[in-house]
Image (cartoon, rainbow, N blue to C red; front, side):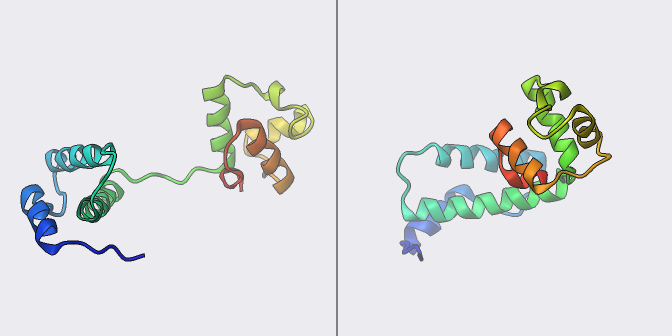
Length: 132
């Protein structure tokens, strides 16, 4: 679906916000504040939606350059989920197998099977893709 926007209204928004490639933390904070304000606006005009899309892209570009996220392995994700939920390895016995299997999976010495990934996703109520 293509947005139909009023170019004059959109140009006025661009003039007011003056978006540009984000190169500093100050500019990042300024654009982030505008995006937050637009995000919490109940009803956005088509022009505001177009501006929001542009600003989000600028933020994503800046963050990917300045705050890269390392890929986590499935066992690292499992360890993190266990930590934040207060679960221990013994809590996973029966969910994905015996204590030996759980230990090997948590330590990354054994890969997580599709059946185990499904069981872990259901148990932690997260996406199955985190474990595959």
